[in-house]
Length: 370
Image 1: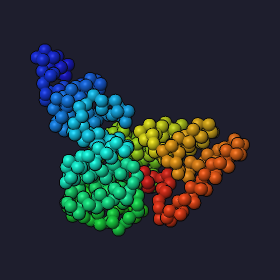
Image 2 (image 1 turned 120 degrees about the horizontal axis):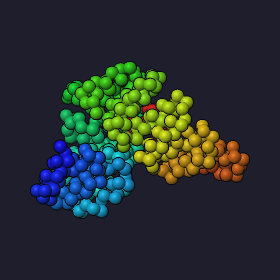
Image 3 (image 1 turned 180 degrees about the vertical axis):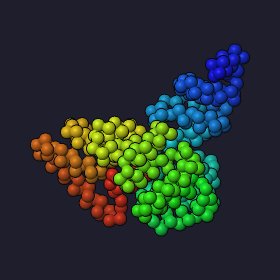
């Protein structure tokens, strides 16, 4: 049927039509002709940049940051392009100074936009700048207390910051607004998880999935809960469901890696950590996890490369500095080992001086909600 429709469109010369091009792109996507679909969407959006549904389809075609950078020169310099870039960056879980500049420019044009403020909060969240993200979400709730969009992300922020009282208030308020929203179930699940009641957390994540089977956060967070409950097989199933829905979610790949590491299957872990690292190339946590897997396999040279790569994403990564010292000591390169130990001690001293309450989150499932 799709072949016949494409042929008819070609014959009638309709593929230059403004609003038929996005539909043509959808057919191409169903035929796994992604590059042609991207070309069709770009052509349509350059003619009429206000078709947001076409932007969303184009965003779904962006597998990684490189794909986004490749398509940008083909698009007109229109403010809708900046909306597309900020949305896609948050979907791919990466941030940069250019993304922040685009957001500030758009907020200058639309200062009252709750959507743009939410995108800015998500951008801070992806950068693990939780205080800034929390402040923006607080402002959004004060402005519109009945708005539930993206509040599940806010619950993740409060969960990582271990603000139990604030998360409890958010859960109660969301339930009062609409207890049958997937976001509400996810928020309540995070609250029970923070209390250590993992069985109740799983029940609420399952409720969210009954309301929306493709609710990505619920699958991923439920996987974390199953790991806490030592039910590794159920955790793997949950993470795999998340990956099936969205292959660009690094949290599910990372969760699979850690679960197989618990099962002492390092070659499986290695594969999944590599997938997570490809999606988050500037996240020190991903590189430290990958390096740890190489250590288990006694591939010290590869482990050293990964730990050094982790330092590029975060120069003050104490874990990587300590591990590098240990590895060089194992290789009997005492001077190099002493150098990294010295850097580690120096960094710990700086962190202690800054404040005892500053957070340097360890690698754990609890912190993977971000």
